[in-house]
Length: 300
Image 1: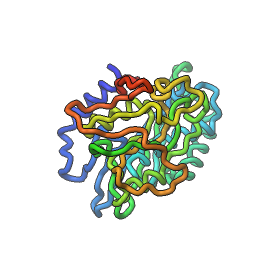
Image 2: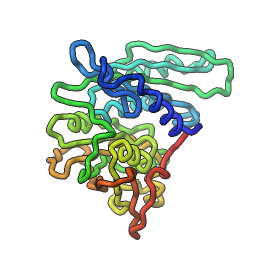
Image 3: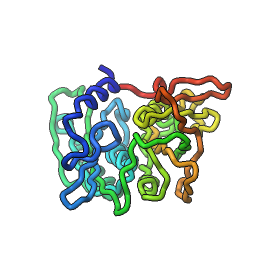
Image 4: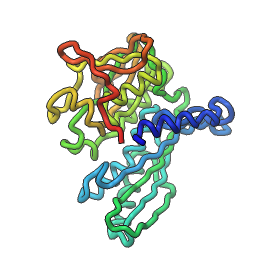
């Protein structure tokens, strides 16, 4: 079963969670889950794994491994417009891993850097020396007063699409280890008057992740390949939309919204949301041909 098929299976089985009843506000199917606490605060929760040989190469500098382990989950919080507050970490390591202490010391530093200190976790050892080191980080964020979570499902016809940075070439450039979670952009997007209707962080590729917004929102997304900010290490727009691990935000914004000066500045518009009977995303190449965006990206 492919990752997308497993996700669909999980979402279909989540009806019993009874969204809107009790304390669960957002369940499976978005960048994070959202729970309302007894005093009315919104707690935003996410969990992500980092697998050696999949998300980083053996021999990668330990500090960069720790950085990415924390940053992946922080990027999910940013995609909902939440402010990071704490995290939990687990590690599946080889017995007697000589780097274990240094790894979790580095994770501790990076978690503090992004305002979500490690408050607990767990370590397990396996007996297979060929088994990849696996790190899991659960992170929590809170919504500031007057802010609401930005979902994948809120895009509207007429919305324009913006990016917080370049796409493609993440592994070649090392960006997949050094990316900066776009916390400030997320906080702006979740504010009441931002005009932002939908948002996602790009981990599986612009094509596949844009299609997720389109299908969740019931709109058609049309992306203009000629307007994409493509990393120079990519040979073309197709590679840039497929490579994944960009960790930029894709944002659907009302065309009348005032876009503030942020660092880095938003790039766009790169596309538009339109009304359509068949939700999904397409990328229009420089020759005017349409390409299904869902076929461009990672599916583990």
